[in-house]
Amino acid sequence: MRTIVILRPAPGASFEAIGAVLPREEPVLWSYIEAGECRAIHYDAAHPGGVVLEFETATRERTRDLVNAFPLVAEGLMSAEYLDLVPYTGLALLFRPEHGFKPGLPEAWMRG
Image (cartoon, rainbow, N blue to C red):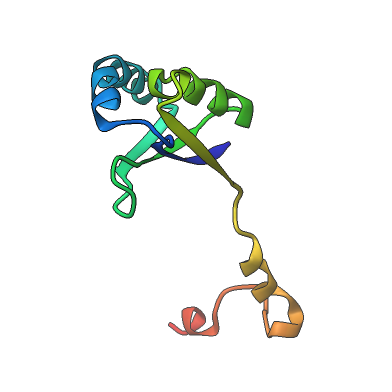
């Protein structure tokens, strides 16, 4: 299950309080990266202090458990928003016969 997690400072959380917890947060994040469960991390340019993480885990519950184990989340200093991703299948419509799809190799490939 791929999930985008957006972490933002919780209302009332000061940057000083967040900064004090970061030394405990970063090893947890690194362990998720090492385990292959956190695939990417970015700053949220639109929200100071915000972070966007991409997780790939067996279940959405596993992702939520990992995020809830972050010290900043556990202590209520960051809030989490989850975007569960599924493959986009809309392009399959292009391959329906009514759209002119013809199975087989393109004719240009057949010319030698």
